[in-house]
Image (cartoon, rainbow, N blue to C red; front, top):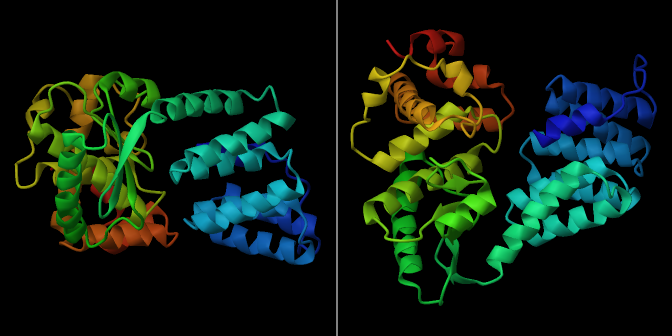
Length: 356
């Protein structure tokens, strides 16, 4: 969402045939990005920087293209370079801050936005996000930390908090179970933050029906009496999102992301189809984006539909389908192309027939 807004905010000058100058290559790059051609855009911005290595707009474009192509390290370097050349380039600050936040560098994200406010003190997007991030940082200041093999767990209370130990055990078991089934594991150590219910709502601004969140970190409310089975379900769900993100950081429709999470949280337990009897199906095409705005009733239906549709994908393509589909997406294919190559039927046909 932020990247789209960044692209729309960039003023394009007239495009001449056969780019020769850095400005012309940069304009071509932005046009390619707006058309969804990230690889072509990356080549155009590289040409622009070859002609003029000190062009902040070309460097911003290179960072945006790298982010779209899942090359986060390159994106960070290019955006930081753009800001060194032009500290007032708010678009670069916005995108770099979001990348740092997504990569669990909260203090780094705050620092980038604080610096950006010097040049753009009235920018509402900067001020709103900065306020939320500072509030989150204040909550975390009093937290303890536990290091597990594949996770860093933050929590309120003494370092020997029993719930942190139990969370570590559950996550380690789920790590091998889910990663083995998908055929991939998270690329890096996964940050996990355990909140009270009040802290979770305040920090994440999640709807009341949400039992957890993955946004680069696994966030889970654990206040009050904890049902061990429910805790295992939620942690497995959010860890699945982390594994999916490690394979394809963008371009995965929400129904597939949530469908996988529901399937792996349930294990061998059959999917409860009860919500399907109470309301008509939500078209799967409407479930390609975030579920955050759904009512609790619609969310319940959306999760069941997502799980059933994802199971259908696996049934059609076999056990390696999910890995193949996600790696296809990560390679830069459109979802429609990635889907047809992995599942061997057109996505449009699947949308019409999956519920039969």
